[in-house]
Length: 343
Image 1 (cartoon, rainbow, N blue to C red):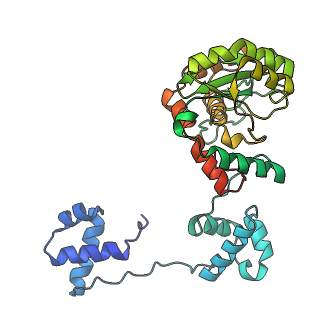
Image 2 (image 1 turned 180 degrees about the vertical axis):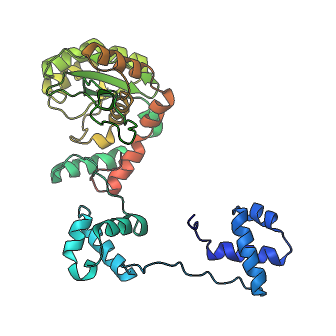
Image 3 (image 1 turned 180 degrees about the horizontal axis):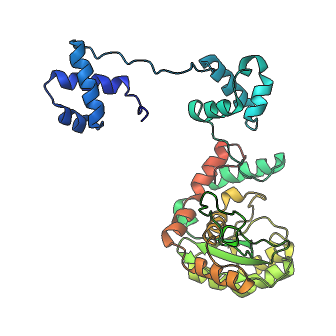
């Protein structure tokens, strides 16, 4: 059996000090949280040394590391400058420094010593200079709103969900099993059906999740018809007073804004375009897509039924936290000068 993890200098010093005050092995193990066998081993070493100072640890046997601290610093600087660079590219870029080091070793050093994670980058909208400026101005303006006012906002948006023939997630595959067996595979289609929905929520609850007709393009006339049919009920269900919508052309059309003025709907007029980080309803759409994993969504009716079930059972505390997260979103956006944030 191989040796376990070596004790740190602090742990060895703690064992030595407890030996001096007359503690036995079991008491030392209970106090330090270390394994009894480790305590026994170091107690014996301390007694054999016959001194108050703890004995020095022996160096592990084995081949010396091929990467020095200087090498690690070079790797860190290059990865900081080029986050997408691979271990193989690092080795090719530094032939003299990493000639004797394998790609696998470089990967381990990046992960274990430098704590770099190798993952897909987050997807964020590409913003123009004008868009970033508008987002920044919007953030500075609406930071003055009190939390009570954000509780009165009705957040709305459309989202599209795709029909899938699988349950999502990973499978456990026994060694030697056939990975192409039907129980280990997922079915796919080239052009799956999809469902577009419109929804609205506020601090106090959700409105109706409206399923739009198949192959419907949301233009200003259809969007106005949607609002005329469902907006009032959503205001009542969510106890809201201020309407929010994104900057899609159908939403900002003069026909729609004139209708808002005519019926007396108070809405946020200067919502910046291409700013999903500021809208909390985007988090609900992402949550719903995650919760669809593991559910049967192989047909449009099944997908619609699952969406309505998830929407109807959203946690009220989740809605409240999302509604009250807007000031933090604005602060984060202002801090990043209009660039995308963690939201």
